[in-house]
Length: 329
Image (cartoon, rainbow, N blue to C red; front, top):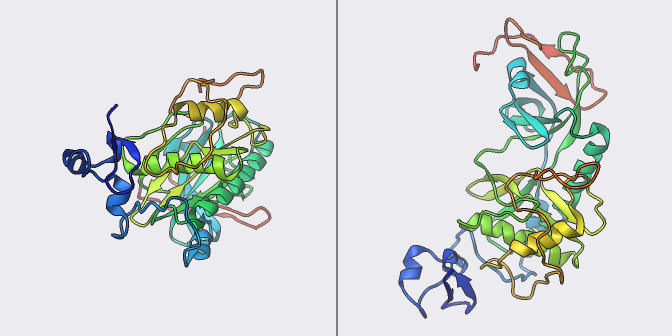
């Protein structure tokens, strides 16, 4: 891989940290992505881990992207035919009907049978999201880049008692706002997409999370949507020294595996710490890996005659359903 020192910041970066135009300018004249955009209102204004900028607290406050709603509806078709899936969950798209986000798209997520015990995994999911939010808030407050990184904050919502749809009657789901322009940036086994600037920002965020937590955590398995003014993340994984964040927390070996494949880029700071053990314990793969009960990891009938729109909301609300034709399907 070819490397070159940036003419502005003086740091040594691989070729993919430069645009084709900048690379063609040659040694001594090429400027990395971060330096080209710096001060021009661009997406990737690298700040070297600074801080103390005016408005930092406001940036941190914008980190959380919440439901801001109390009810939502999902068609039977959406629930029977989820539009997306992960390694362990199904995802259905619906619409908020009450609250500040009324009329906006949302998703509910539920676990595939046989993978996890839902009650405990919901708690672990929320716990991991809280830690992810804390780490991303810190990143935003230090103005590492010009744009905000947001985190979808899920809540546990419960479907109403639905006699005609027993598989979802009183079922608990994770509810959060819908994300468009979805892409995966890295995984919890060390895999990463380093081809374009935003994925490299995410690699830097993962590295930053280790440094700022004094080596206790790595925020990874980063995925979400790229918008004009922000990136919105969902379903991240926290790797911890004590394996306290559920079945996707691969522990110290996961942390080592991340760094075995991580090459610092133009959005990392030269002073950020790395672990002493940087060996690879897991085969890097794009999918999310889960610890099996016995150790190791995974290398990682309802047919309505017409569509019913089913409502879901906070547990305890008297939520029913609206029987209406849905022409979208």
